[in-house]
Length: 287
Image 1 (tube, rainbow, N blue to C red):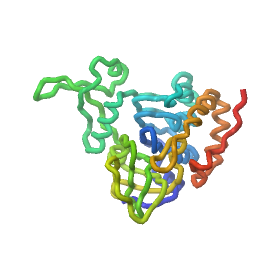
Image 2 (spheres, rainbow, N blue to C red; image 1 turned 45 degrees about the vertical axis):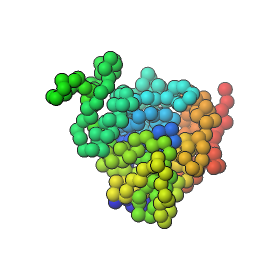
Image 3 (cartoon, one colour; image 1 turned 180 degrees about the vertical axis):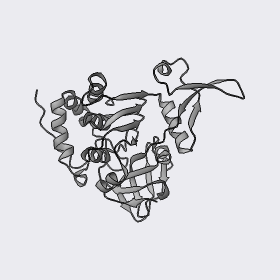
């Protein structure tokens, strides 16, 4: 059953060195505040899982938190590459990074298999793809009923999954609304789960058709962090900070600029300061 913690307590209790960690959220509800707290607490040797790693995982990788990345697409959405991710893969800075690449369908099915307690996912996919040549965790099996060749990947079972959502009630039930990715599956597949939320309320509101309620028993910790998805957005609370995604391209290209930004905006910051309004403190970028 979920307990209500502050963010630093939740991360200290439920995220350990060497863990397999999924931080999910699709386009919005990306758990930036929680990821920053993982960085501040200097977690190391993490296997990071995310269908679409973007700026948050660029930051975690650039700060040396990750030893492996399991993913199906990586980039700065609408802008370009993740420069800290590329530096780790191509030059081993700040440490070498192992990668395991899948398709979106492969990752989604692997999360669903983990949520269902199955050892693997079986689905139609990867036919004609070269990914199976470089990823030994993609196998092909023959259906015993039809003889059809199907793809199979191991179930994703994180040690801890971390999500951001709109609201939780005081019993620890969490409401996720808007574009829902694989947050539900990531939580159900995990041994432990943390949800940061915009606010904790006495009673969850009437739900829209495109919403999920994660009951308290699926979560380990709930913590209120207003603005906790910034610079991504939270439906109904604040918009996406598109300018920051553009700015990140310049910040992240250079190691020293990156480290200076992280020192000011992450290492010297506190969870309670993390909010979409006002904007995060930024350093001046010079040529």
